[in-house]
Length: 218
Image (cartoon, rainbow, N blue to C red):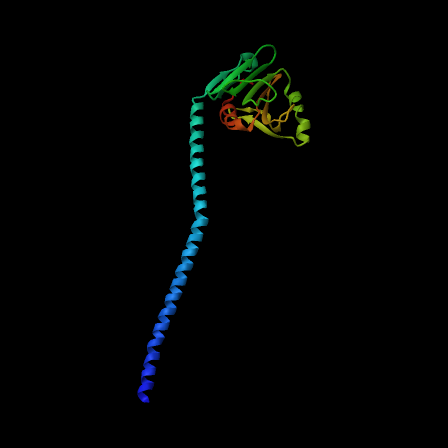
């Protein structure tokens, strides 16, 4: 009788580690299955994000390279010299731009546009320089209604190379149309100089090339 009890006790003692081993094995298999499922799920979710990020980075690098090429194509800048009767104004502009000038009569109009200068109401010119036979105060009043209506914003402005001449810079809807642009208005004795750009696409060259180099004899 004692022998049987001892044998039964030995069996129970051996059975416990076996059961624990099976439980641990099942738990390990379960954890492994869960980990694999989560990894697959994570990979499924993350791979498209990585692919999208790589695509964006490649496109951004290409855009930066294209912009760098376009900028290099504009250099070296050309110089335009206006007539003495209109203040001998001069400015630098990208060599990829064309110029159309009308210096006849009592006013001067010079238009700048990439490739070919076109005409028409739907054309947004890169830069237009006008010397009008109208006094500064009268010219500025043309923009008053739009400033009051909130269609344009007026700020004091002086050219970097002619800081002694004080004028105004108007930004917003250009008078006579729906185009958004910028116009710098400056006094020139009994005349007025207007330097404008009719599209935000050209603001970089307008600010960094045209206005940055523009000079005239007050």
